[in-house]
Image (cartoon, rainbow, N blue to C red; front, side, top):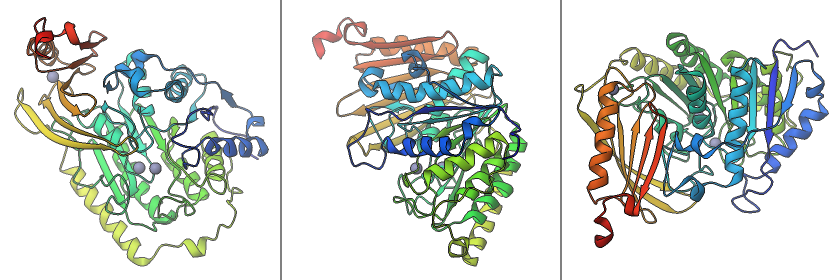
Length: 447
Ligand SMILES: [Zn+2]
Ligand SMILES: [Zn+2]
Ligand SMILES: [Zn+2]
């Protein structure tokens, strides 16, 4: 093997004691086979490649990222805090210059966890990448960050969290939502009024092969990254586009994933899905690790790989070419703030937590603002947590949005309408949960 060009940190956390159930595809063997494969290949004997232990994410790291109702403790286990802490460790290593790149191979995954959390959806409770990014911003200042989600499923949770943030570019490549969970991620989903064009969705047809993925990277992802000029590139690295994955319908290979990673050149990768746990995941992860280390990956082959059988049809070639052109046209027309400065823009969302069987109704309002990401207000109702309010004063909020948020908190405390109020105040680093008597003093006579 050639001398690696990069110093690479790898963080493993298989989460032995967390599973949805014993036979569920999202289980600890996902990482155990990968760990064996990397050891067998002598990855840790390469100069510059080192394994590190995860941190445990502190409750404040979750509180600054999510509105967890009723509390962080109620919707997470220690395994969730260590998976997020593994991503935090990756960020610390890179930000402190200990390594040039890091890959957090952790589970449970996170990219379906949205801004509000009442429980588990799509195997996710908290969003590991978002917790990591907000940790970076708290410790190292506001950064322009790009997240490229290469999981086969639309990263709807990450999209939701960064929908209004003009300083976070979210790009998701995924199997078309008309054919796969969670059913979202269409090209017209482009970001909220303060961040139009900061969400990019690339829905790909079933049976897309290496050629299709790499076309999308060249024609859409790299030009948009070039235009956005992020300080950091994060890869939300789901390996379930593999042709042998049992829960999806794509034809991506280990070589394709390694090549994609080489082109994308992310600073940090965080593992998401990938459910062909023995025949594909160890090889895909190995290919990515070698590409991140900047060394030769050409020998990496999953068992039974036959590129001829996986070649995509000319119809798919054409479809993807047109899709790339449409996305770039729409991207060039976006960017401006839409709506009237200082007015609220509202949207209604119905969210289903498929793993936990919870239905949630949300009204989300954001203040249209040309100077910051805008004050965010979310009213949320689910069976277990009725009448919740989340107020977020974003990182680098302007004076108007900060003051409007604090005023809204006072009004809400006295309104006798809410059972739980949460405040994320990033400007003053204040995270509050108000319940019961902390709300209106009169409320106890009414509830
Ligand atoms: Zn994706
Ligand atoms: Zn997935
Ligand atoms: Zn503002």
